[in-house]
Length: 481
Image (cartoon, rainbow, N blue to C red; front, side):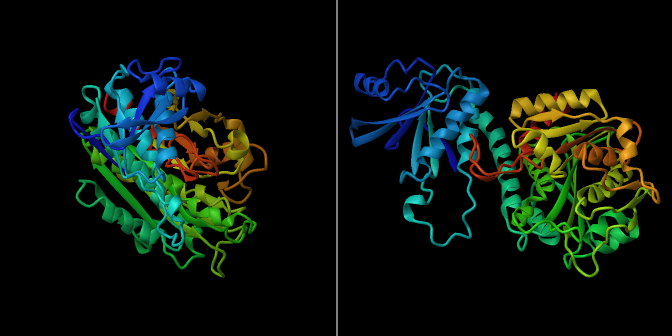
């Protein structure tokens, strides 16, 4: 969806939307429209949308009112998303959004516009028989009366929208389209000309390095593993920040195979890698003043005759040995080698990893929050603040030595799963063993937030793009401050 800033004298589209605070309709609203809104019980509550028709110079015009409640950031997003949801397939190709008389600032205006664009994203390329009245028609938002500075601020938010959309694209594509090699090529094409440096490690290089844990997951698939590093160096610094993503492009569970019901959803088990790629795209497009490396481990977990077996012992890049108890606890095997490699190669001061790691986190938090584990209280508080500001919300869980005994192995240094209890915590405890001294690290378990079965304020059903806004807000507030 295009956002176009118009002059006050430009002709208005047939459909014009205005924003209304709770219990405060626009002062210049016509008496007929005011009476119709009251009859429809429109009060300006967050997310309410009311529509009426008015006679204009060019004929009958549509007027929409969207409630912004008390005009907080999330109120504004809900209003913008509600407008798009109502009019995306309405037959209208353009919607005029009039900010006149709202007393909003530029930051408020772009919050509405960002939500409108994000809510419009759909991935319909494989649908060939969509009825005409279900096809999206809305192509442009034409902005009138924008607060001073809105157009400049939108350039930054448009970069954020592009990153979220790229993540949703990667997560939504089926596993016969996005697999380790094609994930790399999709990124290579998307990052061309952005200034981002790409480093790709293929199977031979991974074997030479000794990434036995990651390669063990991949050995049952005809799709060869890859590690992809994306570096945006927008500012020179002593030590960079690293974002690390789990990229299991399809997860059958391997020999510890998952139940058939719902297995098709496991195309989004690379949601962490998708979020890292989208975040790096955002940083590059908006020319962020930060030194950030995004590294993703890309594998497919399949139950081939050559697949890893429960009971196998693998040697990780760190030299630590891992007894594989359950081949469906594969994400931590991928991440542990990537965590080691990024520390050895780039020596980051801070690492944030994102992974659809455990079903246990969904049992704990549902689909509202992602789980956060951190070895550094300052980093945890910074990420928590970024989550609240961006809407990608986090809830912190404990890390403690008492949990370590649950993943001690009798024949190796560590086993890849513990007992049923504290499943998300023991997964994080596993990863912590691969984080060096002096490195601030946080692990975000996003299994419940990358894909949803109901629409939200800024997304339809399906891929949410979770993580991109969070990481971008962290960069803005911490690295660029």
